Image (cartoon, rainbow, N blue to C red):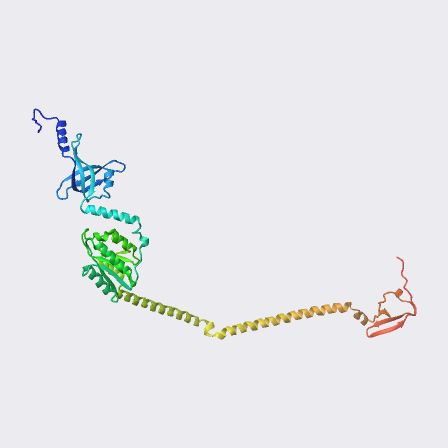
Length: 410
């Protein structure tokens, strides 16, 4: 029953709010769809708040929930479309309408994105995205494997750009469905066939752009594991720059477009020829510069006196030799003269002390018959034969008498 009121008998505010609260809460819990326009997580708080808005009309409501409900829903971001099981209620103190959320789930594309995010986290935890396992692409592959849709724009882009950049390139093409439930299996099988090919050095998986649903096969876990297990480097060229399927994360190289993939797997022949020409020019210039430098050094050496007139050094050495020889001869002569003078002085002193000089003054040296020198009259006896040695010979004489010289007593 509606409440009755008038200016004279108004209803108390508490009665009106209580009636509204009873009416609102009789609605019961209901699933609603909306877009998250504000999500505020308060660390450590049990109650969390978010704001949902209708995706078509300008209608928004504030929702309260628990941290456990938000965590169970997976990663939620602003702008995401969700389905929430809410129970409307009216707060008596403030009269504000709010919704208590008891369950929340990604809706439509959001559900799909949440599933893909869970798959990414699981594969990342297993190391399928690890940078250290990425293999480098060969500079010039013997053969290029291509997995794409038959007669697709992606095939034309890859083939034309590869031929344009390196006309002699060889391609091994394997066709597969690029969307639909069987696409992931066919692409994985084609990758396996090319991986076993003896001459295929790189594999390109190429597809044009599309919606998330169209590109869903390239986020298939089985395809991701098949690419991870391949021994041949794999280039992922799926969709446009903004598209990032799981295959892009597992592949060794991610190309933004099929055209970009062609540029990555083969060098540009014209560019390489230009670089070779430039390298040859730099080598030629380096050789010319080196020869000019060596010629300059040689010219400098040739200007030196020793090379301009090699005999000059010999003449200089010969002059020094003559000077040294003269100095040596003079030094030897001076030394010999000094030694000669010293020898003459020594001989003079020896001669002065020699008995020969004494004999020349008329003295004689007396010896006994057996050669003993007689220095005293007491050394001979009368009738004894003695020998007198003179300057020019010897005289044998007999002692007639011995007369000692008397000496005075001191």
